[in-house]
Length: 522
Ligand SMILES: [Ca+2]
Image (cartoon, rainbow, N blue to C red; front, side, top):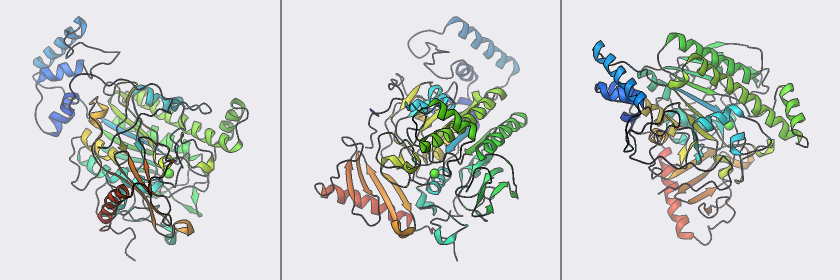
């Protein structure tokens, strides 16, 4: 069984004991959206009334003793009665709105590059708010150590090479493109749209620049952002001289820092949905803090003044992340201002570990972006849902980017396609203390250049054991993360049987991906 290990090196705060009592199921937590709407079954009105009064157990701000062997506080019971009476008088079950989902994905943000982690030279009060007001994931892993594969995993729920994206897609330079998103796979927005959600991608797509792999063609009602892998400048938004900024299918040439543009567009979108009504799925994918490290001048100056002795490289990265954090703060404030926050699940994570060459902080873990050691795969992870997720809670569940897909489906009562690898963590969010799902974990990256030669690197994890090949030309390495979380002692030569066992599992994963092309038909 896969087990997470306590993050002894983190200073995100002491783990908070999980809620006692019976695990709560989805129908109990979301009686109307899931039990009634998704299945078509009518929820008894009294259960609805009680659930409205007790959105989740154990909340400091609205604690009830119901289910803990106690009694309802008088005021809550009175209000429940009034509500129930109103329901009976109207003769109908009030329709609670379906929840919204906002996934905030940052680009190359390291596991330790935010304030709530305990890092001293960075101030990210808005990202920290998601951790503080929601659930911290102590073991959140990107599906890959680079951009495109993790993004493909998020939107398909699959290991990325199973949908044609083992490596970075660079359609604008085909000789250096190492993936092609399978046109046959349904993406998350297409599924959520069937459940009644309006869907939007704001920011970076990086899963193709041409038909059929553009955001609108793959299920997003709205696309406002950048098609490519990275911008040569945050202010010119070009890549290899190409303008890849779009509003839906229209090429646009906006002025300003990309982080500010994406923030403004996200706020506009949320404001628009507040007026229109109905649930929405917003995938907000910032380019920051990916290369080039270009913070606005005033943000860099602020960091330099506050952090005497910081290196120029680190100061620039910190400033870029703090500027990003301010943007996230505006988006959260817009959810608050429109009143949508109380019905919105916000998930925050990064697509891979930080790039060490840029001064990124990946905590104590080995390596960073482009590597399948822990520093390249471990990412920040948090989720916030007022009234549903217990503030300040924490899980050590082993969680991957692709699990977001299944979680979003579960929240809207959508059955994921049978081929999906991701597992919903919605029960965990709602306080179910069940252990991590029992499964092997697999990470892959295909890349060109002399260091990779068009071949792949992989990591394969079973329980605490991890098999690693961080260069296609290096022998396999084996680590026991339970006793050696920083991957310092390679046990491959002494644990040969274990290497063979995990190697067989790895080969199976490679075979599973073999049926899907990762290049377009030429
Ligand atoms: Ca990235």
